[in-house]
Image 1 (cartoon, rainbow, N blue to C red):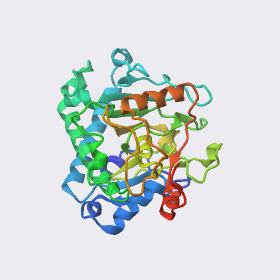
Image 2: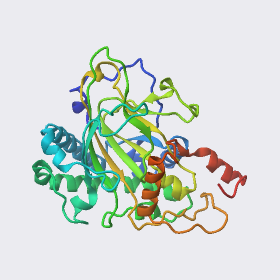
Image 3: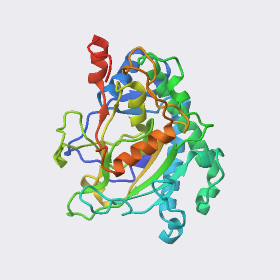
Image 4: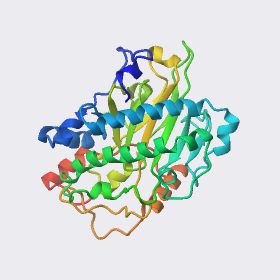
Length: 360
């Protein structure tokens, strides 16, 4: 999340709401290959699939924070454009997920309209892997800044993924090689805005509970509202089972997506999360956030990787590309065949280590 100076512009996060306890890891220690910090990283990826990373103290981390603050400023400016202008670049799911999504375009669990708007930038478009997409003038003017964000965000996530290769029994560089910058993918930079809520109004969900489909996500935000469903929550959770994430200055929030669970045979976890009304006085302000969602290259295989700590299936898996796998998963969700829920996690890894299972 951006710096303390940015946090000072908003009401503080309240101290009397239930929050999820997440590991806050040091990017400095991970770059130094600190053994204890690397173990904490892998443990977090198994337990809940979410962790905070403090980016202060290294040139790479400090640069990422500067790019995040620039992205926040541009997010605010984009969402100040007239709706008629933004809707010229409307996204058209499920065929096209890039462009502008306005408030109410998606439905919540109870059928009511969502309260989230976002502009989704395609990495392929910004980096020149595909023809340029039409975009508002502010996006065109600031393509260099967005290009720098994509490059540096990919670098930061490559550093983090490198620490998951060895625990999974993979060769160095395996995981990041599945999502290279130069190959076509669904990777995006999502510039989000959640509407403020009137004081005294009933708290509600702004964006429905879900897991991320891709490999790994890096989120920057200042105002609360993001909630995680703890692994201990019942199968049919109540609103009271969800826990807020407290935004932390100088940190990014990282979470693993469904693709990582697929590749690892369920050893790591992709966890349910949602956006709800911000707590306390923060409910009265707009909630801006910036999310880099790394996805596999479209032609990458989604077969389970072969590693010492990855659960193997009986027999050979059929090849399926990331392009077809993502379409299949999206279609299953639309048809109600794949109910949203957390997948993967520590239990599978522990069983493999003990030799209790050979398949999942």
